[in-house]
Length: 631
Image 1 (tube, one colour):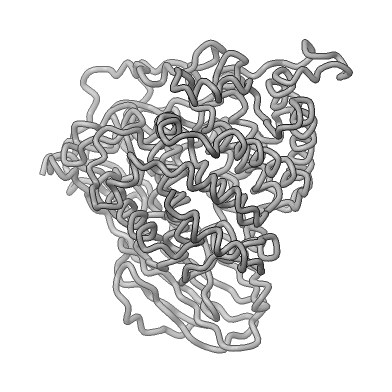
Image 2 (tube, helix red, strand yellow; image 1 turned 180 degrees about the horizontal axis):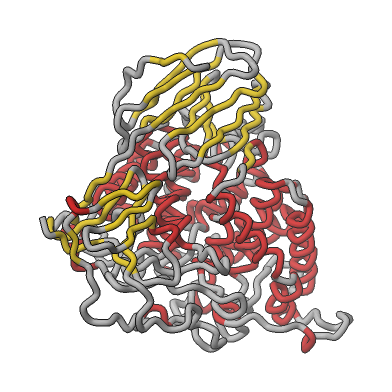
């Protein structure tokens, strides 16, 4: 039990306005303050609004799908578990049942409801639209009813408590704590982003049940239990501790410390073998969060070492990670360019970890990775025609994206996708004292209430190289404006009100402008982009085309493709692991990069006339990302 004594000592004194899930957020809603130093703070999601553009298009498609799912369907498995259909109009049989991972015979049922609790709250903060708060309130009301019906212990789930008992005995069961983690996180987000006090009450009662269930069991039982995937229970318990001040929950967070995985990493061992990647990452997020509460150098160094290793050696050109959900030998990357690369949940969690690390270090290299993964995986996950999303982002040449369905494929990556496409605005801007950091070039409006600043970012980036920042309301005093100088950029050109500003910084740094700003000031920045090839470390004859931060895909047509949504059968759950792309022989996947010409924007052609476009805009077509290079 690693941090318990220090956390209990801290809990007795640190009852103050707090730094939150990320430093700077949700002030006034915390009972326990972070103690670790941070170099950058987040804005609340409600302080940033996306403006029209390619990124907001994804948010709007996501919002339409989220709103379309009836609350009764999301609650049906919970109500079934608690037997509370009596008195409901139409009763149990009137509710159309969700399929796939939400079926009543699936151990993971209920995880989507947890994700949507988070997603509705994020979307409410991101847009201010009341429909998302109303949907979240209705879900919380229904879950509170189920919790009361299940007894006085505080237990709440869509499955019987026996699944937890089976886990404690080391029996076969599919990740019950993982599913409960989604509920905890969703309820906490409902409290933080929408102010729903009932959500916090439900989460606190659940936490009390978990404490009584686990604390006091022997160490062998604890270690046996943790062999089963438990998501980010350590992080969720620390967050519950932060909003309640109840020391039971930091004790629970410590209970979920997985020695077998994290101790070797703390000792500098970065050989992850073939462990399950998305089981691993949330445990490290928990350590990053633990550092914020304890100041532990061990937790700080462990989480940074992991981030460095993942982004430097395990990430594909797109920023995605894993193949068939697992780690692989990064020295043999070219042998793992298959149809099952890039579980989207892994990238979702790496971006969460990146935010924690950026807040403490303000390292532009972290923002460089965040941008790469956001544009080339998260943005690329969603089908622009239907709004459905991918589980894997395949890098097998000739493969195509395989999308979810509205009814039957509520995979983990569907759940994390609901959240990801709601929170694009959360990492565009950060602040530190009187400094505003601009990390991402996305059309948006910032209202920095504490400083009296209103700023708009007007851009068609990455289709164009220039972004324009307009000061609509200026702060009273001087402010430093720091613009990220991306690692991929040529020498930027910066103009303030038309006058050129000398750029002394280098790539992967910040260009800072200190001045007393006035309403109407305009800052224009041009980041020169160029076409480059990123080769696999083990085979220089395999490489991806990248323009600026954008990974490009070659169009290989639609020959032999099946229907775009093959998972319409409610009994189908995991066939994407072995999905047959039926790739025709002889597809043109070889390329001489010197023959590629730019047609305009982010559209290119090969010497023989084949189209190349951003992977995020390549849908319902076969494609190639890693070419066989001819020179």
